[in-house]
Length: 115
Image 1 (cartoon, rainbow, N blue to C red):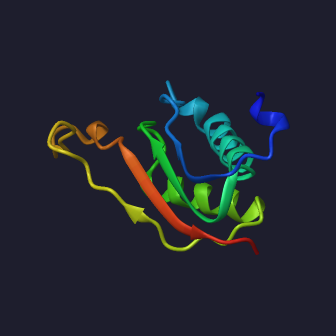
Image 2 (image 1 turned 90 degrees about the vertical axis):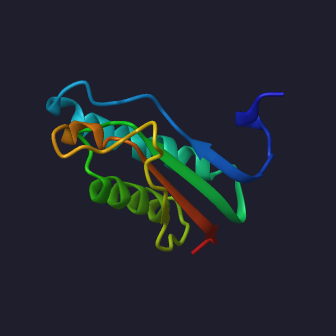
Image 3 (image 1 turned 120 degrees about the vertical axis):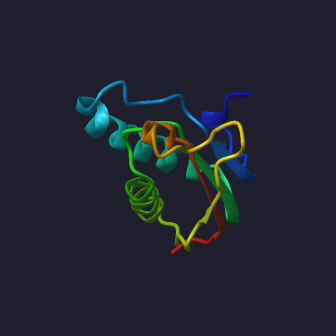
């Protein structure tokens, strides 16, 4: 069965791509790719489903990531609420001497009903 031709719907979808920003010049393309993968995936999300979005692109600020996600969800015809932002675990410490270590982002959007 090919997913593209199916009508299958999921309760939860997790999107966790690899880092999309090797340098600052990649930020524009990364934003476009995040939006594209989110909008294409939402087609397979059940009404009021849960979308878990992750990013390990350190050049995308957490607030910018949330903005990208909300825009993509809206453009896909769903109503985003304020996400749950997961905190870094102990194996991903955020150090004042190494701010680049603050790259992990995980946002959970519950109840993504259609507009």
